[in-house]
Image 1 (cartoon, rainbow, N blue to C red):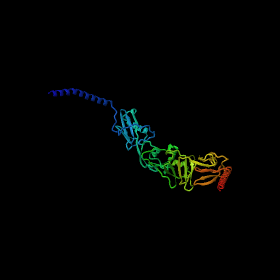
Image 2: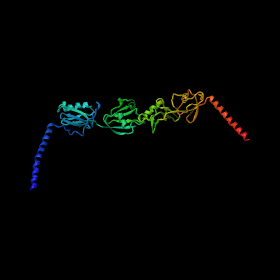
Image 3: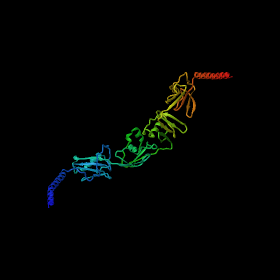
Image 4: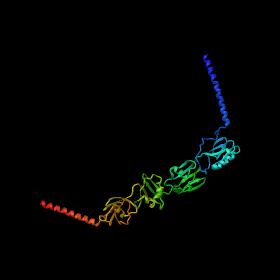
Length: 391
């Protein structure tokens, strides 16, 4: 009996509290309904967010999201595959292919039948992603998802850049039956932004392969690249075509050029823009400096940094020859496979790796001959004295 009384007391205590809570909830619900709290309608397919500033020429298309404020309503609508958007109680508006400014005008024209256009706003909330096709001389081929306002140069970079065997002077962009011929070498090397076109849904990009029947090999530390041959193209141009300016530069100081018939020779890196090569040649970039070796009758026997403008006389002077001990006549050079040649010290060219030998002057040779005879006579006389004393 006591337990039953306690339960009645507890129920009697909670009943007023529950009734008060229900009343407050009803009042709160009535308040929200009266104040018309903004709610997204059923057209919202995903949370909308505001993009950054977009180009004024940007064309709307399927996949774009628009935020529309209609007095006290907030809508987030998507452009359907047919290019239309649907606005509750107003109808549909075709916006595909229109700029945001043009679409805003069409939308406000439609909603003005029901809402005051002074309190209606339209903004681009989320940009579409679309697919383009890439084929040809690129590392990654196929269908590629691209972000809105992607330009051709960014797409090519995202697929790994054009291969060295590709013809980047004539990249084909096929759009709605029309074919654009784009010189990407001007875009990459000269900053021709005018031809760096914005991509659109359905674009097809084809990078042609160059004729590799004749090619030049460019060697960097750790890898090599074959580049199509072109007459009068310089070593520096082959360097760019092989992508050398996009790889980490290790501080190249010299270039070795090896030909099938004319052997090999080296040039300093500063001469790369003047030197041309033949089809089938190999160009190797090295970080080691070019040197010329000087020996013979000089004050400092050893290595001298190569300078293409120097002749043998310059290297001899740099090594510290004196006219008393050395002679400029009959200067000899060891070149290539230990082939010794006689050169004119003031006129003939010197190449990297040459060994220049400076002969001694006539005075020095006579002095050496005299010392040799004196030494020989000393040995003979010493032997004669020992022989006589022994007898």
